[in-house]
Image (cartoon, rainbow, N blue to C red):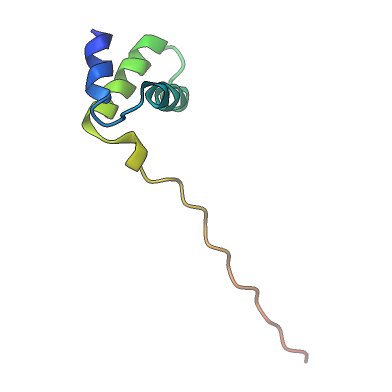
Length: 73
């Protein structure tokens, strides 16, 4: 049942509002066309049960490359 998944995910997230926000963002990113949205939501809650969604690494921006200096000929 989904309520069991929600309570399991609450072990890592203390605030239900925050859990809803994180779950909706993750569901939007992980949803595949031609699959049920309910199944994707359940997958997200299962993942939240096993890992802390607040500690997931953020996408790192590539480091800026230093500008090349050219010498006059």
